[in-house]
Image (cartoon, rainbow, N blue to C red; front, side, top):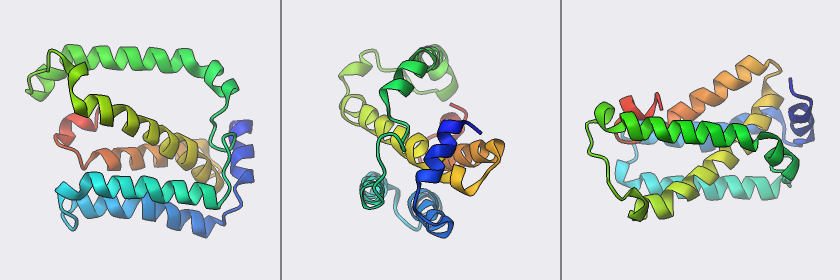
Length: 173
């Protein structure tokens, strides 16, 4: 396992049992409640805002710092090229194949839409903090095997995206 990740996992003062409860409370149960109709789909955004708030409270209460979340200038400069390349290639593939796969007409001026401007970037930032910053170190404390950690993280990320329209399109992307 990555030594930096191991140090982050060791720095977590929360017990394994509490981490499992936090993961179930923030990442699993609410999504399953939406997915299976116990919570109406219209409540999706307010519920997700509440979950972000809960996660922020957990991070402050348990005194997580930027280093524990992997948010350092060293990490940024070390990996920015990979993130940029992945983002550019992913965006290009969506632009090229998005309409033919989804059957939804692409918006010619997508950058003018409120959804993109106000929600997309904010949601993406919180997803990074939640799934990379919090969840990966938390899972590293629970699982010593890196493969198991990555699979668990991916499955939880896929679960989140199963509540959005067109899961057949969203999940592979």
